[in-house]
Image 1 (cartoon, rainbow, N blue to C red):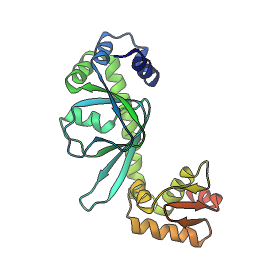
Image 2 (tube, one colour; image 1 turned 90 degrees about the vertical axis):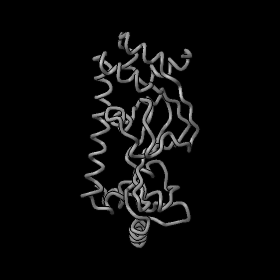
Image 3 (spheres, one colour; image 1 turned 60 degrees about the vertical axis):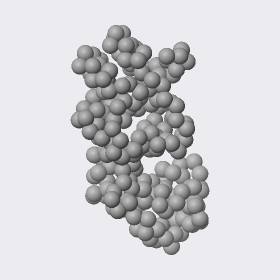
Image 4 (cartoon, rainbow, N blue to C red; image 1 turned 45 degrees about the vertical axis):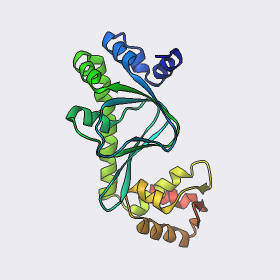
Length: 222
């Protein structure tokens, strides 16, 4: 492994870099470095899972797609993350139930499944790292299910628009992209956006949304 890449993963995963563990050092030495450009497919729904991925840098969007074509973003992977679905598939010898798409250029470590299983069995420190990361992302997935099942769409949409417009008054997004993020249908999102527009909170443009009254969105989202 190149020294600059080693420095990168130690910065992204300081908890691994600080552990004096021969097993961890061995698997990291065997790990391959994957470079993916933005908008590339990291894994597809139905693919076999052959590697444990550790994101050194970049961002991957993980989404699932229903038979009727509806999509929902499950979570995003950033620097220092590992994928909860990858972990689940490796433990269960299952195929990916979702798709991963890079939103930026991505550099990741890929630990082959054989070495991954050996390390989990042999290293307490590596087990704690794997299950700690798994638990954190699983909690986020459960929160998402609760939001989709029980949350009001207008509140969730307002909250998402506030997040997207943190440093701007113009959000570059489409109704379909918002629907994918929130697990809804494009037509439903369009109706809700038009309702916000009729109240004077925003103005709709082709491919973008101009935020006019952010405080009203904040009040609704909270």
